[in-house]
Amino acid sequence: MTPATGSPVHQVHPVHPVLRLAARLELLTLLVLLGNVLSGHDERIAAAVGPLHGGVYLTVVIGLLLRERTPGKVRALGLVPGIGGLLALRAVDRVLRHSDGVPPP
Image (cartoon, rainbow, N blue to C red):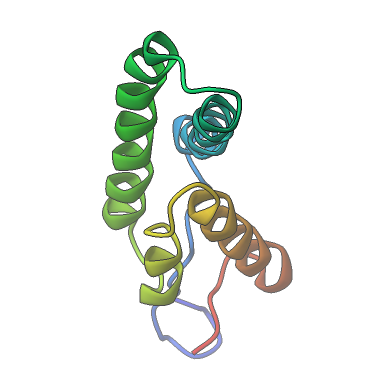
């Protein structure tokens, strides 16, 4: 509760470091897969990096869905393959930076 108004304060929680790491790995693994396709498609690289990319993508999507008080638009950004996780985390950071943790009404 805020002392002045008595209304509850809804703070946006900081992003967990594992979610940040997963978002970066999602982009990195996508770039490796695209580079592999452009350079001749080595099956071994695709077999090693493909499942890793899928796993970190799911980690980002599920991590954003489980975050409390995260706006739906931010969660939807996480669904964009490759860069969506980083865009969603940037949006969360922007809310935290500009509003001291209190999202706009």
